[in-house]
Each structure stands twice: as structure tokens, then as C-alpha cells.
Amino acid sequence: MFRDEPARQTLAQFDYWCLARCDDGWRLECAGTGKVQRALSNLLGHDLDSQLSLPDGSLRAAKFDGDRLHSALIVAKNRPVEVDRTHLAGLIGVELDAAGRASVLAGRAAHGESAGPIICSCEGVGRYTLLNALQDGARTIGDLGDRARAGTNCGSCQPELRKIISEFNESVAQPAKEEAV
Ligand code: FES
Image (cartoon, rainbow, N blue to C red):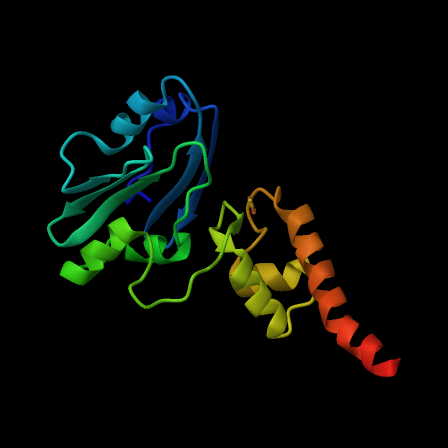
């Protein structure tokens, strides 16, 4: 998550990247091999305020402008990044106390609900957020876009959204069928 738009020449060093605007900054999903280490340090610069390197090779780093979060980087090696993107995106530019700063490196709110595994990487929308929206009455991809912004940027997640809608519809239809037997 970045307050300022990351430089395109840095993004070009990743094998995959996807950049989307969030309320007060930019959300970047990227992946790659080889020169990724250098590209990652180019993204944040060297004057980090908080950094946590974990034994599994993952890295969490943050940069602050006074008490306001300027940027945060969560890196995982050989596995998906486990982070509540919605929570982190909401912290960009926000004045944080010590607990708020800690939640940046934790990648989730201290007592918050997880958004679940990310389905729409452009908008950082997780599976649980989508299921909640479906429980609340969303029925179409358009509804998920209106309620959670899922699928509203590049559209590449729409097949997965369709699948989740269909699985949800099947799961709610199942008890009715069982009752009828
Ligand atoms: S992944 Fe791009 S709109 Fe969902």
C-alpha cells in the first residue's frame, strides 16, 4: 500500500503486477523471481520506520510520515500473502497510535474480522467479504461491485466471482432440497 503512486519503471521489474487506487493511495499486488529483492527496496526506499523479517523469508515493512502511514509492504516467499488488504488500505494517510502501527506489520486489525483470501486483487476484496455481501442479498456480479467494489477494475476476477455466486446459490438451495425429501 502506498500513499504516492509507485514508479512504473520499478513495477516493470516484476513478472506480474496490478495497481489500483484506494481511498488515499495505491494498492499494489506484485510477484516475481530474480531481481524482485531490488525492486522491493526501490518501492519503499531505505528509510523504513518499522521492519520485520520472519524466519520463513517473508518481510513486513512500513514507512510513516510523522504519525501517518505513508506505505506498507508485505512480502511472502513461495506462498500467498496473508494480509487483510482492506484494513491496510484504510490506514494509508491515517494518524496511528502504537496499536495502529503494530497492526500495520501484523497485516490485520487487532480485533477485526478478516476479509478472507483475496479474490479481487485490484480492489482487495476477500472471499468472506463476498460471502457476507451474498448473505446480505447480493445476487449478481454487478451487486458485488456495488456493495464491495469487487470486479470493478480489470475484471479478471469475474469468473471467480461467478463461481462463488454459484457455490453460494447451491449451498442455500441444498437445505431446501433436503427438507423436501
Ligand atoms: S482482480 Fe481486477 S477487478 Fe477484480
